[in-house]
Amino acid sequence: MGVVSAVLLVLITILLPPIGVYIVAGCGADLLINICLTLLGYLPGHIHAFYLEYVYYDRREQAREGRFTAARAPGVYSDHVQSGGQGYGTIVQPTQ
Image (cartoon, rainbow, N blue to C red; front, side, top):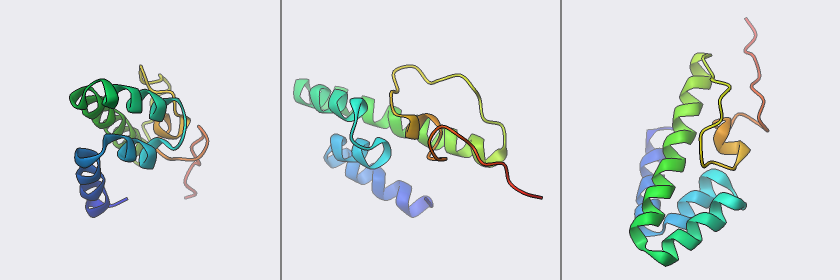
């Protein structure tokens, strides 16, 4: 995802936080939590959605630089977000 995709994701998340979470984390516990938080109040849904997106892009950048941390981010249940979109919890080592 480039800068344009990230900006589009942020705009979608501002309008409807659960759709932004669905794009990043897929259908799972994180989406259910975000829907509940959005129904309880629009601001908690936004905070949760932007936190998931931050973790996703941070882990993606760490994986790109080759310095991925093994610790799981607290409150994130999606393996896709935890790994930064790098497969199912695994990181493929680049060939040299």
